[in-house]
Length: 444
Image (cartoon, rainbow, N blue to C red):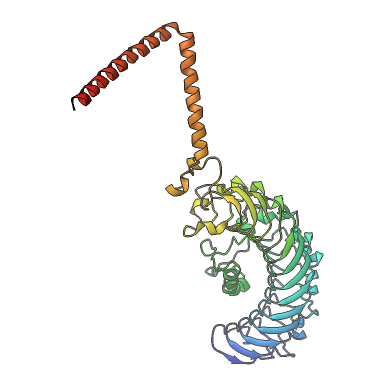
């Protein structure tokens, strides 16, 4: 019986990759110490899955890879490949293409234009450059697009918003300019949580109907997800089903944040930091109830913080630092629990912001704001205001007494009698005391 599957991952195997694997359909030699290059005469016409990630293989990706007509899953990540990605690919059923963490150069792979089966594309951490093609919007089955830390430039094509099942978009760390596409509300999958539409991967499932390729790749995709989510294992049960994220940070994007982005109710992570965005934070941002992490730091955003931010019940991480925001920081149960050890770090670099948790109090009603810190709630003493209030009170009081005596005859008569009675008593007291004093003086 001919060998069809070979699984040798996560060992300490060394040496080079064999060239002749005639009958094999799945080859996994990942997480080893294989070195050298992929043989130019690499032949495996029945190969469906090739996992060589996390080795020490370098050189160019050979044209012989293009002859693998049955290949659905190719992972060459975390190696030392260089040069351009071969353009001779004619593989129409490629579902997973993972080439990240190499030194690949050139343009966005043109051979993908005719691939309507592609679901997962990871070209991050390479040296790819140029514009993203407008036909990327034709790859209608894409769930994950990871193109971060390359040298892609120019505008983000608006056609990318035609990817209806897109659930993870990472274009961070490039040279994109221009505005964020305004039709983000077209990203249907990000608007509502439909469990049956998300990419479902469960390595614990052993049913006969489970596709063998997905079973084999589940562990690898978990590794990738842990990287792209910065180590946050966003799992529900044993399935990676709800990774919904947009990361456009570290570019040169300008203009305002599209208001349509607030319609993406299933979005869990939004990172637009380190750009040149201006304008205000959309008022309806509070409608993004699935949002766990929001980073808008290091932009040129201005105006007040929307009060709806306080209604983001799932929010666990917030960074609005180094913008031009002003006004009072909204308070709320969720916002007040973020960054408990140093909450002000979320807002530093915005000189116009005031209120808790910053040191500078807002003008007008500081004395009525209580945050548990008595010193910060004390209104500063103003001598000028005090004296003005004292004089004003005295004048008003005298006018009240004068008017009462003027219009009330009985009060006027009684007050005069009281005045003369007190006057007589004081006069008698002074005369008696003065007589006693002069008598004692004369006796001495």
